[in-house]
Amino acid sequence: MPDIAVFRPDDGRLARAGEHLETRGATPVLDPMLEVAPTGNTPRDDADYAVFTSKTGAELVSAAGWTPGDATVCAIGESTRVALETEGFDVGVVPGEYSSTGLVDALRGEVGGLRVEVARSDHGSDVLLDGLTEAGAYVHETVLYRLTRPEESGVSTKRAAAGDLDAALFTSSLTVEHFLDAADDRGCRAQAIEGLNRAVVGTIGEPTRQTAEERGIAVDVVPDEASFESLADAVLDDL
Image (tube, rainbow, N blue to C red):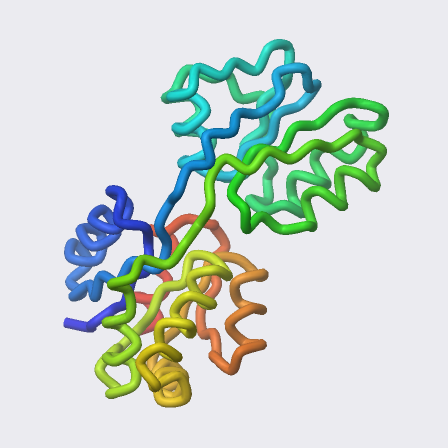
């Protein structure tokens, strides 16, 4: 059974990721690299479009009692769409490409002169804001939550440094950065990178792949669909 490192937040997603790997005959190495810290902010309610990029954002605005008014609600990714609809929001736009670039392309001809509210974490890509602004929209960003690294994170860095991982699944650029920060804390950054480069490394999306490779981590797998299950299955198939 291959040992596969998983870095999802420990808010239910980590456990579900582990269960998925176990059903595929793998041993998950659960090492959460992200922790959600809500800001208490809520989006504006006078926009023409309201953009959400995560399940967490959908849940936070629902809990706060926010309503979109007359805005068309947009979701990047199927998991975000499902979360928004589960919370009772009607989703009007889901780009074919589950990325900031994909949403900009989907809205480019629609948002000129209109107000667009972007509600997300503090680590969102500038690609979304810049692209919508260039398309002629008046863009406002609300930071719904901050993403920090849990103090206890890092067990996977020692496993990687010892050559004791068969694969690692990075779901965002921030999980890559936090993995390397945890390795720095343990004095094993170079060895951890070497260990990952002897394993199979998968990333969700090109931005995450680029972040990893810029830091010396060779990426073997980038699935076509931007979901954890697709990432895990593609890495297992590669193994």
